[in-house]
Image: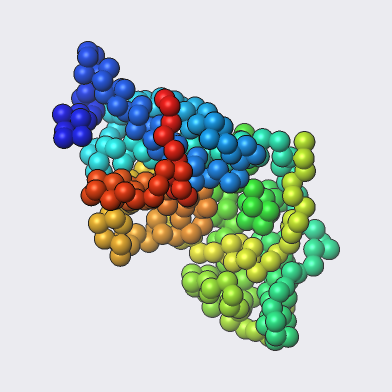
Length: 223
Length: 102
């Protein structure tokens, strides 16, 4: 046992039947509740009911699910971080996912394609910047139509334009966060390549400028 | 069911364009991000200048993973503060929940 009353070897304690295992499981559950509560509390503003009681219910359910997930993988712990840090991430992931699910449970998720009539949205003060932003928005819309598949466009619009949480969209589409992120990554690579070929980015690997600055390499635009 | 909030839906705002053309190379999956999250956050706490290009790019491009990494960092920071004997944020403040009964 450590000074904090934790097992010196968590994996052994959790894997060896006996009183030590029971105690380790109890301590682990406390850790999971702590981390889940921390996460739900951070995100409570998006909950339809953010009362302490509602937060506690979500945190406890997330802690239970996270503990099950952790115990299924406990043999994979390699000791590259503290065990408690490793354990916390399971609870944080589960709690964050649960909060997003509750946040969207009564909201419909609609996948839509880019509307041909979508006007570029600009908000720049000077006419020059406004023209640049409008030109870039048209170029991005054009690239989305020519370089992306309909599925890629719908996923990109849902996640990056409409700000639907990735876990929520994955749940509604019956897929995973990882699969959707791969789609988004491919979208970004295709758009950057397309825009670079048309002179809107210095090259496909160029770092994007801060959002309040134009990223055009050719402000006049290349049709 | 309530519809998706209609405001700004589908609009290519400058922020949305920034997200669409973000450079997320080198590729790192959400699963791999989760695998590295614990060691990455501990490295950041030891050295705030710690740099992992693949993790940094992934976290810029994945809001969910970014929130979870930031949360883990905040949790470890609050634990470190508490262990050093500081009182830290009061229970019920922005990042710290009140005690749970279970």
